[in-house]
Image (cartoon, rainbow, N blue to C red; front, side, top):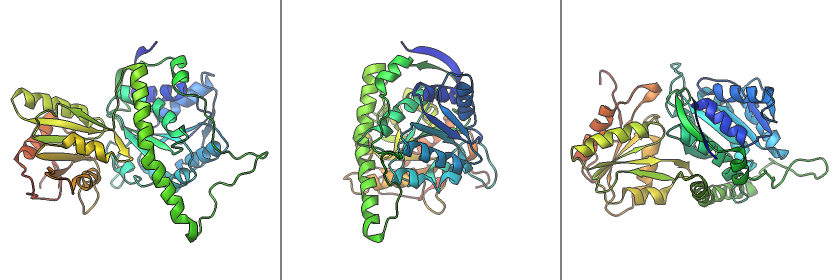
Length: 391
């Protein structure tokens, strides 16, 4: 029976991971992610979690330790943020290339310089092409659920890819919410024991991460790409199973009051809930606006985004990262998904909330009003960094 508990979301993420009984947790602390591995280390030290906690000297070593553990057949977990994720960047494609189902929590944080410890999505966007499945939570309950779902998705024999669960730094990690936690028995029923497809063992020698000559390298990446694309059906299947057991629905693209909307806001992460409040306010005034929330970032949900925005006149796509000299990365993906679609909506690319800057209900209202004024085929600007003082 699920139990409702109020706690900090970062601690809740750690508790959810512990319910999955990882064999190895390797991590290095970095704000605002620190509370996740810190709490897991407490659970191990107190004997509440039977796992090896490896306190390493860097994020690079943390993910490297997870590679060794996963290759040996262990269920492995790590967590990081910002510059720590960049330090893992050298190792991230190795994990996916070796098809190791490592799970990582990312407390999303802006990149330096200048030094900034607050939230945006610069960190994960810089690592989006490393071959990891990537999903975004918008509240504490989603964090708890997604951490458990992540192990099942990653370890599925049709997938065998690493996965990162993104939770906005501070705006989620350090916020206290009331969340429903499944029981240990419920998790064990949902998530079977990990049985590796192949593992490094002295009694059965295998080779992993070997040299990829030009004659084979492209085929290796093609196989990984096919696995990534194919993972979507497993993700959807897992989410449907979760809904059947626990009653909470997850989809690659979630819609909010999109019926009859002429303009739609598109968000990822915790800002979606603030945007919902703005949509409610505008709908009460008769304004035809709605919201589309991207939950699945990789593999990108092309079919679902096309279906979700069909019939609207414009999309205001919110990015929380700068792709310097180009529109936001999410806007670029949405444009690519819709470029050849008949009667496609206008795309308004807005870069918002950088470095933890507040984006309030009235800001979403202003952006939605901008979307209502947009006309199909009339692109006045490629993108805007919203709210910059003095501009």
